[in-house]
Amino acid sequence: MISIFLVRYIKVFCISILILLAFYSQAKRLEYHIEIKNHLFYPAKIVIPANEKVKLIIFNHDNNVEEFDSFSLNREKVIFPHRSATIFIGPLPAGEYSFFGEYHPHSARGKVIAVKKINIREAEKGDENAN
Amino acid sequence: MLINTVLLFLQNALPIFIITTLLLTSFSSKTINTLSAKWPIFGLMLTTIAAFILSTNLENISQTVDGKGVELFLSFAHVLIYFFSIGLFILNNTDSDILLKKQLAFIIFFIISCVNGAHFIIYLTNYWAQAQQVESMLIGIILGGGICLSISILFYFLLKYADQNIYLKTSNYFLLFFALGQLMHAIVLLQQVDILPSSQPVWDSGVFIAENSEIGQLLTVLFGYETTPSPLQLIIYVIAFIIPVMISKLASIRLFMRGEKSC
Image (cartoon, rainbow over all chains, first blue to last red; front, side, top):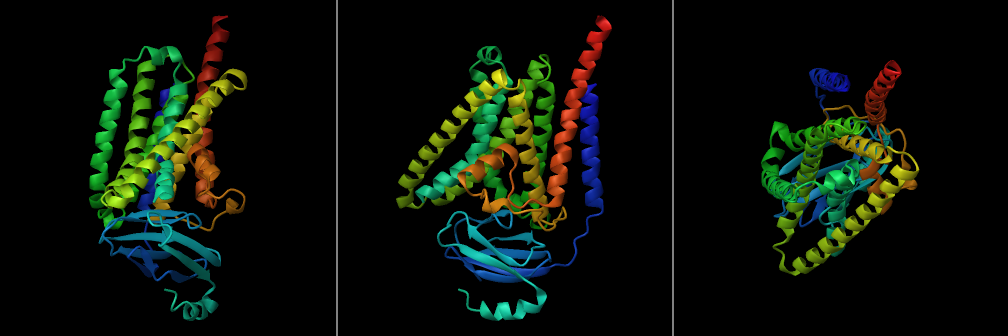
């Protein structure tokens, strides 16, 4: 009896996942590029629109593996040497969200700044020379 | 490098130590004593080899499915851990099916160790070559191992005490919460590659317990603690908790009804 219910639960779970995947369509997101060179993020500050999901493409130019990690963004991704990785972040309320390279936490550090669309140009101007 | 190795070791090894403790408490000491020593050794060797194979292939996996390969692979592994763990959670209500329980326990240990082990092996193999770092890494591993071992021994005796003096199924419920933590991890991974929808977090408890703090890491492993959970995570957490509990209660209702009939 228990196994019947357990199997039913697993079936329902799998069907739900399949339904989700069937309705899954990836909308066009704003793209932001980050590069890792000598265990540093370039740019170290990225200004993104608040309340919008965006795509981060991170390219690792180093010969070592790095891990993009952020507790406030709830993201964690291993980036292999000379490879790129893609992650999606947001929608985020306006504010600052720090990220770091887990394998070089002292040098590889950066920030995602989510701002309301009206202020985005001013914020970008201010952070042009972040590195 | 030393601190970083300790932290990375804790992050990757703590789930393995915690699940080992939970699985040990799932079986009575009599069952463990009758277990032949060759099987755990064989299992450990198999797991280590599998973790090495996974670590060498993770780079190739990462380039598949439009760069989403790792997330899909790992989330599938975490979902499997969840289902095998709830299977064990439900079976733990009965004294039968010892062999099935042992098999489930091994599969859970195998998947968790492979996933977490591969992650740490990638770090080790990449930074081992840097000669001056070897000593720091070795000390880091020893320190991290010591901390994990201390936590798991303490946790084992706390669970034993709680099982005997507070509530008989305390350790079993801890197994369920651990499984929920794995499921939360799978959801985050799927949200990370935009397969599951993500929305603004319901709350931010980072001010009270930061996820990167020692307590935060322990809570993450034990209960799937998140400082910024999304509504989807919360809904799935509640549903994924209630359903196994209801299924396990069905068994006791059935036993109760049988008892009634036999009287």
